[in-house]
Length: 192
Image (cartoon, rainbow, N blue to C red; front, side, top):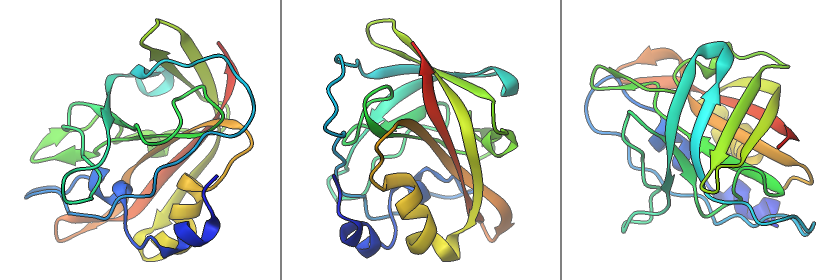
């Protein structure tokens, strides 16, 4: 498990990279440390390939994102969602992280409306073996980026004893070409 001290030391990480700006290049950010799944024994889980959020009519491919040569987190193209592949897979113990753009250079990102989700909404992830895992939303947070290190980092990358899916994008007001908030949706595995 990641020690809280490591998380607190990360000032900016992948979430900001996944947050699209309305124009220009995505910001360069430091990537989070690799995550480890909890100690509980579970059957192997395949890499995620597809995410579906029925309430928002979202259906999107998931591509793995890791670290770029400069140590920042790779950013998925605007038309895809990205799974942070240095952490747990969706359906494995811990908090699997999926990130995506709101929009980028005039193109709408698939995850841009996740801030509209409410507790009880369903999210499903299909893995490479064709197994569909369903998660139920239990928390939706809009967090000012000024509180990024104190609130967003622990919420997204903190140790978990449950099997969760954490979906992240940007939101809130736009100043210049950047969103002022992070939107973090937490959902818990309910069925396979």
